[in-house]
Length: 314
Length: 314
Image: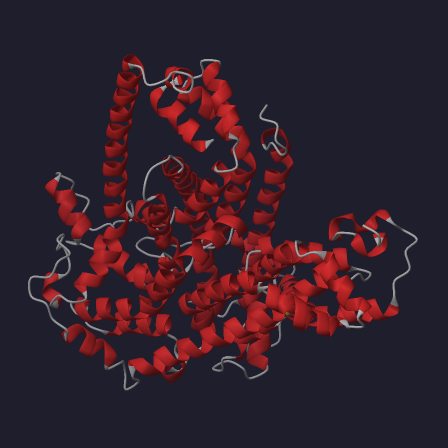
């Protein structure tokens, strides 16, 4: 309270313009920040600029980069495998993420009811999120969905003739989405924490006014939860664009069958590290950054109309 | 409060209105008893549903664990996870390793990487967070904004230039590329986690110490670090598990079998063993997950609460 100059939180600091920095503080600040600054410039900002340069070159790691202008980008959009990888990833993001989040919200609401054992259920349902991206689980998934595997066996019992999903280009996407949905636990835990913050009085008042469960869900739960929905939607979408290891293991690194698991990052890896077309792969990386950036910007722009901060429900 | 909400949701507004004022007259008691019975039925339905969900969610993991104890021929397509002939042969085979390299070499590599990652992340993230939250210096808000920006940046944009740099430095086939970033706080999640916690520690602590003549190094070491235990534990757990499960990093940089971490060894194992040897694959998949599961069982509270409060991903 007394020392106003040192009390400022990072976000409110620019309030005082005519502040004079204490040299000893400046030195200490930059000394403590040195590891992060080194990491930022050497491992993030520097490499980003380098990859922007490489995106306009032909580079194979062994000879010097050759400037080619926009060639990589024009080639990209005529490359059927690139278009395939963009399509596969888009479907995965557009279908998988909403399904996963709806499942997460539904189960979170279930676990928000007053019953015994909710803590245990919460832990159990979270567990797949911790191991879902591991190589072990990818191997299990492959073994379950292979020809004559258990999914095929159960499917045949119900008269399905799809065969193993792993080898069927029409079924690999549902298989990958199931693997994503299986990991609904992380967003569920976050939803649950959000649900616990919704004041009970709101529901009580709504009940007195004769509101049914659907109305309460639409008018209270969803608006009150909108900041958490926004957070989950943003992070899950960005994460879905970057799915790699499960597709790599299940397809043996090829993105097959028929390019049906050729996720964007897998194709980027193949171009960069199997074909050593580092310029081409850098162009792909920058297209991804731009797409993710635009989507993030759209999320933040539209959020003003549907994300409700503060305690107001309406 | 929550008790009330649940009553409202389960039994309807009528229950809420009748219950509090009325004493134990016959009519009210019957009403309450029938309400309780209805609530009991609801509870039964709830538990039946959530238990069924638990079975579905745990099935892939349980199937993997128990399949590791089956003869290879009994695994694929066998819906019942419980082995009829228990065997440990798969584990003997998995522990013998691949191509002359023992399983324990891979295990040791994974362990070294995970432990050093934890040390690096805890050191660098706490130091950077101290600068961001406790020292006033010019440019701090800009750096903080950039740090938050890297949270949303797709990692793939830097892998190609990073690879080129580490390749030129002769660091391919060493652990350096996998560890350097951890010691330079380039995983913004952890820095953010520490900043969030440190910002909420009372200012008076530093001020009192300053009056006593302590510098930033002393304040950081003797006052902040001891108070930072909760986020340090959360960060350590996630740093360990993420490093342990990491696939892309070791895939890029570790190309000699005696340097392989477990996920890479596991992938080699799947590619090399004959297709029918599912038993050994399952056993190795299980062995690779054991430390993660032990962590989960011991620290599940920290893990799930960490996700709930910090929005960390699994």
